[in-house]
Length: 220
Picture 1 (cartoon, helix red, strand yellow):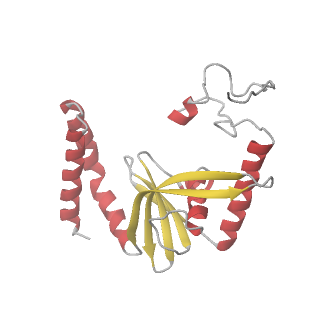
Picture 2 (tube, one colour):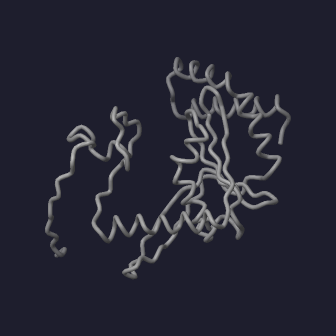
Picture 3 (tube, helix red, strand yellow):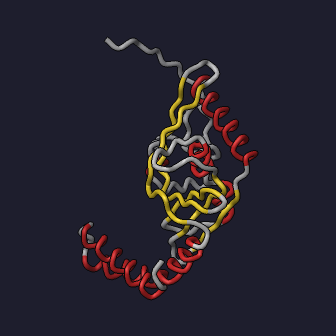
């Protein structure tokens, strides 16, 4: 890994190139570059710490995992892991966030990492060799770059898989609605595209649901 000054220079060059290739307006480029300069040293420092325990083996890698439900139906889960490192204790899966992260976010609001751990443990990421998952981590690239990590045990993987299958069977076999939020926010502060798919605005998520039966017809 390059020395800190060299690493900062290379990262800044790459960020500048990305801004130009994406045709970002010049005024915005200047603002974003200034914001990036404020956090680049901490981003590099955290990366150097990560390189002490492992090396990247896959970036933005796709995986597909098949689960057999109790009715013998096969349910497929697909995922894209931001980054997977391999160290002496096993694999670490990283998820990058452009904003702020916290330990609470990792522990309670990052189920995608738990699912990716299950998938990696079952060799669902073809670009990654066989091995065990030792840790999951969130990397925040916000105004105050942070990283939080949690260790993964065999018991965790068994528990997570059991819970995942239970949720899928409940939603798929019992015709439970696919809601965007398990616990709707009181202030209705939706901030990403997936939540917009719930068509927020046409109803209140805190309203009691109305059940409607829909007939299905075979395709001709």
